[in-house]
Image (cartoon, rainbow, N blue to C red; front, side, top):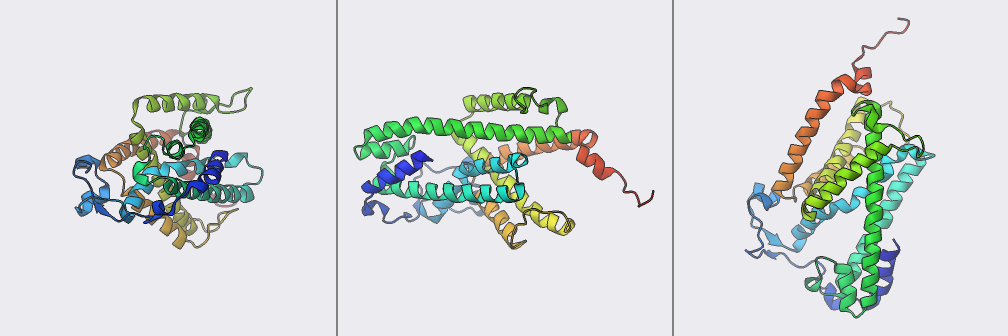
Length: 311
């Protein structure tokens, strides 16, 4: 957070209007050498058969789909909901508050960054520190690099903590072996599932290209948001009397809009990303339906016939 504020506060003095015009470069045919073909092209491009282009509104949507993983951390607030004192008030405030603050910081940092240096001259590996170096502030670039490592490390730790809580909930319901979700007697956390998650994350980070991981996380996050949006509409109709400490407004318009936005962003991801996602989804469904019928506590309660009063 402090680094983002630093970038905006210092970089704003080096912004030049000439670099901000036009703010969205016009769409233009993609260089034949850079054109994605086969499984690397976006899904919508394969369906429609249109020629690939760079920049413009289409470029903004493709970029938004790829970097959507930056918003996956907001799930941590929901995953840690059981540890809040007052979920009905704390959850909406935490989710909406962090979403607003981070979105404003994202936009301001991008505005300053593209105003400091022409976007064609930005480094793809470390654009923020490179921009400060290009304007003569090498010391700021070094500081940002160090802070970026600390920031990425903290994000990874938060996501791993959230994954541990998800594993704990799955084990509690019987969807995973109960022993995996056992609470450590000293630390009072689901230590084993957290250690397993950390090991899997380390292996993926070591052997899977970063771009592939980014697209997989993005499509997984978008699909999760899609499912949640549809579930809100379904539960409002199937369980209208359910106790809801927080009620989503404008149902079904708002959830439907959210679902359509998720589908639109997902369609901008590559076909090979969709194939990996579908294979992973099928494997998950096989394990879910094969294991949960015998072990899921929620499923067992739902399968029990309801008894009439007095019986």
